[in-house]
Amino acid sequence: MTKRVAILFSGSGSNMVALIDSMTGDHPARPVVALCNTPDAPGFAKAEARGVPTELVDHRDFKGDRPAFEAVMTRTLDRYAPDIICFAGFMRILTDDFISRWQGRIINIHPSLLPKYRGLDTHARAIEAGEAEAGCTVHEVTLELDDGPILGQARVPVRPGDTAEVLAARVLEQEHRLYPAVLRRFAAGDHTPVHLP
Ligand code: GRF
Image (cartoon, rainbow, N blue to C red):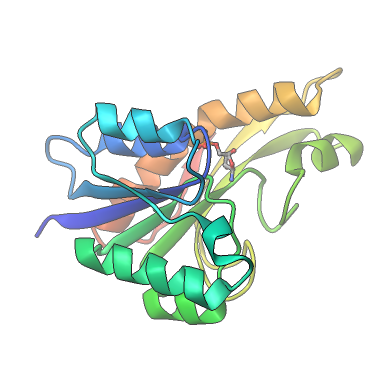
């Protein structure tokens, strides 16, 4: 049966677009909703242009009441009955309650070669540490931040003189290849990690 995919994003939504555009033909999944937590995110127009329903749950309306925010997120997601939730540049940390409810069905892309550089500013930290290599990871979301079984990684070189922005752009290109490749496999029930060179 075709899997129903919800994509959560916060900003430009380029990974969301890569996922939506990949779910055609014999792909085992289809996008059912793109949900965002910021009203002015450029990603909205991109999802709409692709005919994918969008939903806004603005975290600022909840003034720090995380459970209330998540209750609305859950209610909204439930309406679309997703089998898989893809975090694609979704910049809110969610509580254990939310994660537990969907555990095993949420995947995330993180712009580092996990387990290195969890959290923010991954590219600047990789450059600062003198890494020769950087990349991105798709992993199952579990209760620990940027942890959980690794479903795929893609690597890029760190070049002399790279700034965080230059490296981020090089990694983002690979994110757009890796995430669709992992989703296709995950939706087919195969959790074997994807490794892109
Ligand atoms: C990506 O680098 C993703 O890995 C990180 O945030 C960025 C989101 O970019 N978590 P986009 O919104 O998918 O363009």
